[in-house]
View 1 (cartoon, helix red, strand yellow):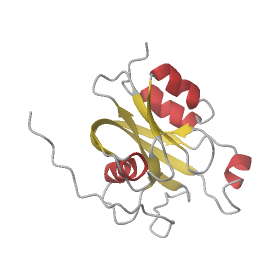
View 2: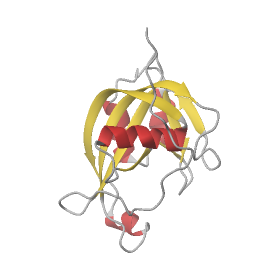
View 3: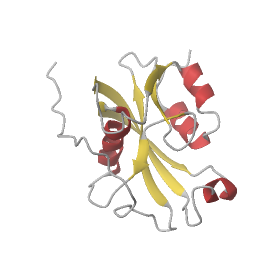
View 4: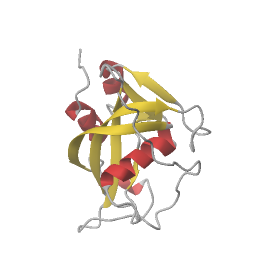
Length: 166
């Protein structure tokens, strides 16, 4: 099988929300990935940078990115250090946090609309833009489900994926 050409990836993570895209209701448009192993029996989770716990790679879809899929793969690179190939579009998931939880992000923190993609990890790098503040770990479905229990919008993406649920 021919090896897929990977796009050039910066070693500098994007920060801030100057280029952030917003939806028609003012919601922040977020793109994320459910990175599965080749055998689809494990998912790669990363440590959250803002709170304790584990999450799926995700982040804002920015104005200079032509698609949510491209934004999702960029986020996977910046946060998890993986090159990935999109396998399936898992669709949209509305924000599940309460208004009170959202306000903890700041007085003007908007709700989010998530667009999820199932990806096949094609390569894991030893260093990546956020390696200094994030760890990554392959987990079984059961372990990932347990770790994502307090993040229903992430758990829904995992459930929509084709990970082996045994």
